[in-house]
Amino acid sequence: MRFEKWQALGNDYLVVERDLLPVPLSTARARLLCDPHLGPGADGVLELSPPTEPGTVAALRIFNPDGSEAELSGNGAREAIMYLRRRGWTDRDQFSITTVAGEIRPTILSETTCRVDMGRARTRSDDHTGAEDGRGTLDAAESLHPSGADGPPRRWTYQHVKIGNPQCSIRVADLETIEALDLPAIGPAIEHHPLFPQRTNVSWFVELEPGVIRARIFERGVGETMSSGTGASGAAVAYVLDGGGSGAGDADHESVVVRLDGGELTVDVADDLHVDLTGWAVPVYAAEASDELVTALRDLD
Image (tube, rainbow, N blue to C red; front, side, top):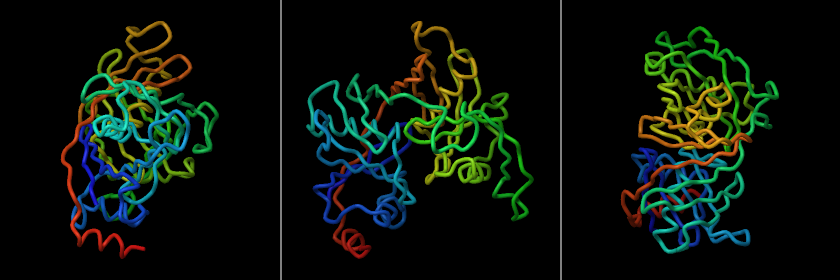
């Protein structure tokens, strides 16, 4: 069983080719592969298979470390895209792949960087039961309160954005506030809030200067993460909807630089909320699973 580990801004995934796996990928097998003690360890697994739609290069499935399947991941998608190019699935600079969220269209910019057409973001979706414009407030308690019980509820003003995955984007007042947030304590209650029936990713952001925001991300099925492409996209869309931007983009879009713990991503948000995400992805290593690991995967039938 051959696989590669890739990372994008510290968000690491295992890349596997479906037709070369000794056993089909499943929830339990994804959990084992992502476990840092029992398997290689990663923030998720990217499974690539031959195209299912005409004109596309491959089909991509994305598994979270808890075994759940994500509709889309900006960082994971870029890793898969650069893998496909390096491994000879295509030699084109522009092509399409399919995901659970639909078709995405990357443009290769360099050996490590690409721009991905993420499609159109929406503020109304089946993943949110609140107001149609996606804006609202919610009360959520810290789930890791020092007393061992949930802390007192805290009220948040948020913007729901659907960009592949559901996003709950929260603007905070200043840099000191965002850096002090305890995401592992705060995130779970928002991720599982009744307003989001499919759970949600959560991003907190603050404007550093016009067109530049700092964001921190809590992903469903993952937890706090160094970076998230869809999380950065959701934060950028919420920022633009709230009147933010540098005005330096073209007349029909705003370009937002999102600074995450793992580095920077650039999110272009058009007037109709169409999103293009630009960033890098690089391989970490290629490996072959031991016979013992393959046996452990087989035993999870």
